Amino acid sequence: MTTLRRLGATDLHIAPLVLGGNVFGWTADEATSFAVLDAFVAGGGTMIDTADVYSAWVPGHKGGESESVIGAWLKQSGKRNQVQIATKVGMLPGEGGEKLAPARIAAACDASLKRLGVETIDLYFAHQDDDAVAQEDALAAFGKLIDAGKIRALGASNFHAARLKSANDAAKAHGLPHYHVLQPEYNVVSRHKFEGQLQDYCVEHNIGVVPYYGLASGFLTGKYRSADDFGKSVRGGRMQAFLDGTGPAVLAVMDEVAAETGASLAQIALKWLAEQPGVTAPIASATSVAQVEELLGSITLELSAEQIERLSNAGA
Image (cartoon, rainbow, N blue to C red; front, side):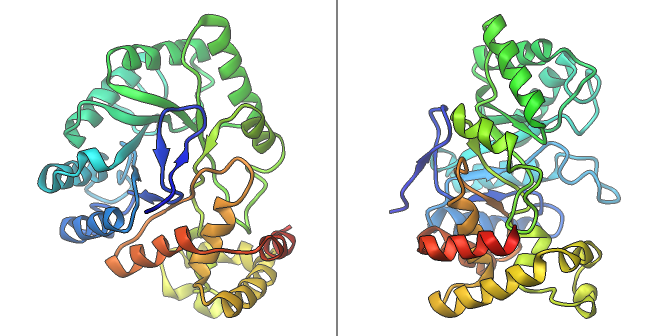
């Protein structure tokens, strides 16, 4: 049995790996997505993370594709009671406006519920900050959704420390729901967006953290070790910054840890994340059953404190 972790101060308890849904209906077709989702649940996974904007960037897509695939899988599999669904509002404009306009939050939530085919979203994220809307107005809109039973818990993604603090200060002052979960960009070679004030605030206030880009767009799988490897993927162009920075040093230590443990580099990268202060579970996506089974191996992997420290020092 997978040992579940409580997600911050929410009533959600999740496995220490979250399945990213950005690929569903995009690089993973429906049949592949269903197989990945089934394998994730079979392997002890519990939370699936998506967003209304997935995958509006694809030519011919308009957003909602990932939610629709997950909804079809929930209906076909009957596994709604085995998983928690997280989705987001704030990047896909539409009915009610854009970003965190209160009318947009209300309309987007209803649209997500319909696509997912569920009565309640377990964790609803503000996908990005919106300084054009008073924070208490956005929180009041989320509060109405909680009161209506449409969402269980509230999270923030891509918020800076000062804005997360001011939002929760506003929530306290006005008797509104708090952001109890944060979804930041964070991995062993890209740490500046989370470590420091934001991490300290989350630890101090028991905000559960579910980082995305845990594998640095594939860099931490060891796929890209020189510029000659960039052609292996459409994401190859993003890798130069990692190679110019701490990437080679981190990969060298990861290779050592892989030799010591028999684990894959992806498993090591995700386990490092899962052991960082404040982090409840990293998010990673998969486009095959073999991939998701490999990622799930990070849950049972054990790394020593010395190995974790070595990885941290290499990426510092």
